[in-house]
Length: 286
Image (cartoon, rainbow, N blue to C red; front, side, top):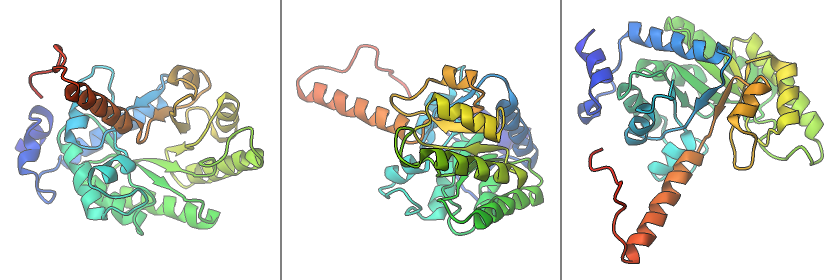
């Protein structure tokens, strides 16, 4: 194992001297992590990803034995740097952030890279260069042909890097509305058609965020494929266990973990302002 690999797996403080040009996992290690991430998508157990947004949150989640991989959340990373969601954050800052996370853990890392910052193939190439082995790339409901071309561009870039990159191609067909609203059936059918096309273009999985209830999840699985669909967990939505029963491959939580953490921070602040002390079980080390 090289010194770079050893720092990535043994030292959570490796990011103190992080240089994205030098400090990243070896190609062999990236290759192994990519294979591991792909295997997790094919396992009968649903892959549950609690999204992280910086090294501190990544290490907290990574130390749990239940954690098999890490996923970043673009919304949460952007918020941490003071940017609104929607590719407002400079791409180099996003790559730096996900690279630091990949360097800090021995687990596979998949990154939310929005819609590719104007060049999906190049942004994925840069992500691979800092140790990321999977990504969400969203279609933003662009025309089918353009969206499929973007997927193919990402797949080609990963192949040129020699990595079996796990592309979780996202369609926003269900991002607005719900099963009780008008046009839902058409939106689900659109998601299915887009999903099939993305798989045909080389994506490993199809990400369909939105209010995916049980009936919709079943339609997506039947239309796109068993263990080929990923969803976002939302408050009030089906549990990961129920999605697993329906044949969903993966569930992630987007910006929600950061919101939970920030709500807890605010609640703690209110308690301290009221004169209370810190909880007795507060960790004394990071």
